[in-house]
Image (tube, rainbow, N blue to C red):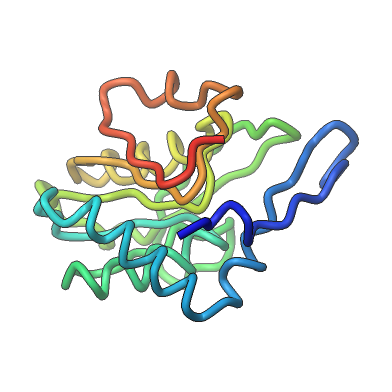
Length: 170
């Protein structure tokens, strides 16, 4: 299916020079969204994961249904201050700023095999921070998966040593 045709591009968002890939236009198409999640599940099925971890917010839209299809649990990596229990925090740089993510301290059991999922791989900072959280709790990241990989930003380089799965390479 031509997922790329359903993704809206917004120039100069969130700042001048950035071409934002708006996946909400793909997500609202029920048939395409279902096919995309099914395709991602097919790519990840052989990884034998115990848990899916996805960063806020669009990562949730992929991570939760993917975890469901794989028959495993789902852990949200949230923006600071959004989780009620004790958390572990990782800070990271974006192509247009900095941010942080947190997970509950009891979200991952040491030794669990984890798949990290997000909508888009750009510079790799968000994913690297998510990996730090998983590994900080003793989890083993077996792969990272994305709908879109912006290859010109070379985010894959920051993730060397991890299997990278992406449905669209742009």
